[in-house]
Length: 120
Image 1 (tube, one colour):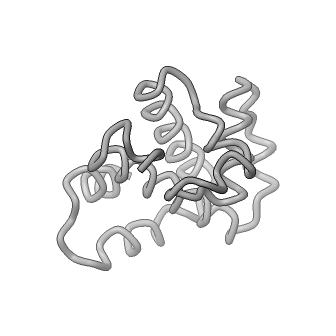
Image 2 (cartoon, one colour):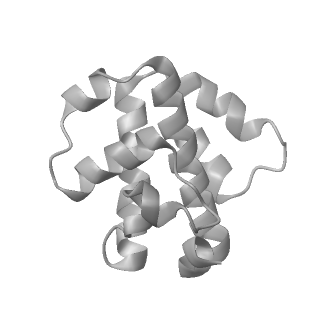
């Protein structure tokens, strides 16, 4: 997780760096939850709450960054303060990977673009 964090915020120059690190953690429920929570926390701090574009499919239709369906579902649970392990346990390995990838891409975009990221 630490390596993935630093590869994201320090923009690892190797094109496969982040995907290889995601492969190591994305199939783990606990790690994926930490990644989603991390992304939601950083986003909430940036925008003073989670924007609708991250939890609502229709709101994200006009944005450059389109969060995955699984990420939106998990972010909505985070937003409603109801995030429970059961929702993560019910995810398939592919859904966990999709949510983890979205979380890392979101943090990376915010790192590079700041608050303008969702509204470019």
